[in-house]
Every structure is written in structure tokens, then in C-alpha cells.
Image (cartoon, rainbow, N blue to C red):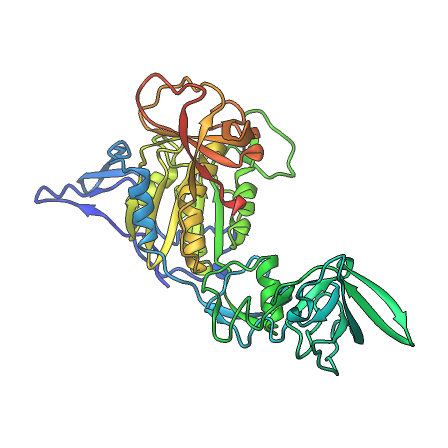
Length: 480
């Protein structure tokens, strides 16, 4: 395996050798298991600074960041760039009881009709409809009861114009009968040791009888490739005797949070430091979207260390998510990494708030997502860009988050240069769908995330958006 980073060397006749601010020589990198967390070997030989060599014995360091030169793309364009590169994952066979939340790796067709026998729709009596012609309270029709048919049994006797069979809901309708009359519409009595019913109302042929194949016919497509297995799907599969099924493997997603300010969640608070919450938020979002989160220790503001760990994670996962270090600050190491790596940059700025520095790239058919370190922006970036990849790898047909419209329940006064995606809560009032913010619209705040079921899309420009205006909303993935 080779590193995902490349050397970048510029020079000329004057022997001035320039090494860009984050360029690395390619060397073989051990597998993920082979790299220890306390690895001290310079696996990627970083050259963090711009180095100018004027003579053999004099080297002067200088640093010229180019992270400000970013071309912003629209959200839809960023999504398109990602989605067109998504590849289906591999499949595996699992037991039905273990398939909840998984997605089918192939179409499923009905092996038989459903129902495969004529089925009673309620408790009552199986009769020939024409035998009830003219029935009324004044002139009831009398039929002899010849059999009692419980669920799961096969009728032994056929019904004719003078007989009826007592039948239970879901039981097999006997030959000769073409309708089931409700128990409440009959009166039962005994005469000469036999049981009879009195019917005081006509019944139509086919009433309360489910014909063979009324739900599904043999060979019919019942579940499409990519369908998510929930309770209804499990019931359908079980009904057709499918105890094992082929599903897409759950993508393995490596998660890193970056920043020297981060503490382990079990550590006591320290001045100027915060606990690493983004890793656990992302882990739950990955799991909710069907993936397997691989949680890694947070990375301090050390570009070389980040290079090693991300390289190793790429080898041991299907793709990598990082959070933090994507902006234009002096310690935003992910910007350096994307400048140096040997992959394809898809975008490094999106016309949205929060999370405009959100960055994505592709290396050997594996994505690297660098999301904002602010919790709100990280959350929005995942929903807009990462969830579609997880869905697509598992065969889901529509991978972008579903959209709808709703009325804004309260004023939103911020003026926006970009589209703003506001964490919101939907509710119904007087028959109308409304949305409102779940808290202050600040990307650094996380309390509002737990109450959100949608993102309110506020268009750019203007003087804000007023209560009662119609706005677009994006349904959050976990509400799928």
C-alpha cells in the first residue's frame, strides 16, 4: 500500500528549491494494524514549511498559505460531484432476524400467490351469495350449517344453495361458497338436532372474501434492490418463506476529530479545552445511515501525525470522515492535507451556512470528507454530503435528503450571503405544516441538534424571512 500524499517540488535554474507548505514524499505505509498510536517514525517525511535553499549551507524557512484561494460551489453541485462517484458496496447473506435496517442487494419476487387460497375476511358464515337473494327481516333465508372451519384447517365439505359453513377470519373459504356473511347479520337456532342460520339481508358475491393472489401474484416484484428492511418488509419476506437474504455490507467509516483543544470524554475539563463530542455524534449518524463507525483517537494540530493516521485508516475502512481543521486558521491542518495529497479534490468550499469550508475528495475510489469542527456545521455537512454516500453504497435509489415545503413559524432575521440551513422542528397547526428553529442559529451550538427533525433552507439575500412565508425544508435522514 502507498501513502495518499505526494511530493510537490518547484524550482528553476537559480537552484531555488520550493517545497509547498504540506508536501510529502511517498513511501510504503504499513497496514492500519501496523501503525501504533505512538508511532514515531516519519512514515511520510513531511515538509511542513516552505523552504527556500539559497546555498548549500543556508536554508531560510517561510510559510505561504494558499488556503484562501478556494472556489465555492453550490450545494447541489457539491452533491452531484459526490453522488456520481459513489459505487455500490459488496453484498453478504444474513438471517432475516438480523436484517433490520439493512438494504437488499437484489430484487425479491413472489414465489407464490398471496393469499394462495381464498381467505375469509371476518368471522361469519361462508355461503353462496345467490342463496341470499330476496332476504329481508320479513322474509329471512334459512341455511343449514354443515361445518365449522377454524384458521389453518382445510374445509371438508362444499357449500351449496341450501347450506353454509361457520368460518373464522383468515380461514380457507370452502368450495361452492363465494361470500362470507358477518356473524352479526345472522341468527343461529337449532331444529331437529341440526344447526341453522337465519339471514335477513342479501349479500353480494365476493363480499368478505380475499381471492387468490389479491395481494401478490406469483413472480411479482415485492421488494426492490436497495429497499430498507423494516418491520413491514420483514413480515413480507417471512410470509414468502425467505429466512436468509442478500444485503449490502455496511460501509466501514473511520472517524477522526482534529484539534489540540480536544479531550477524551472521560477526562476532566481543563481551561481552554473541550471534550470530543463530534466523534460520537458522527458515529451515531453513520450507524443511523447503515454504516459501521470506526472511532479513532482525536488528532492534535499535528499535520504529520494526521497524515499517518488518515493513511492507515484509508486502508482499513471504506472511507474517512474528519471534523475540524478545514478553515483558514493557522492550525487548520486538513487544509494542508488536501493541498498535499495524491487524490482528487472535489470541492473545498460550499455556498452554505453553516459549514462553508466543508471539503471532500476521492483517493482510489475512497472518499475523504473534512467537515467543520463546529457541531452544528458538522451535523449539516454530514446530512447533506456524507449520508448520500452511505445510502448510495447500500443501494438506495434516492440518496439526497427528501425535500418539502412548510410555513415559517417565526421570523428569521439574519441576512445571508449563502443559503442557510437552519436546524428546525416541524409541527402541524390548523392543518398546515410549520417549522421553527430549535435554538439559536449558531454553528458552535449543539443543544439544538437533538430536537431537530429537518433543516430549514433560508435563501440568500434580502432582509431575512418572515413568519408565515413558505420555505423549503430538508427532512433529516433519521426520519426516513
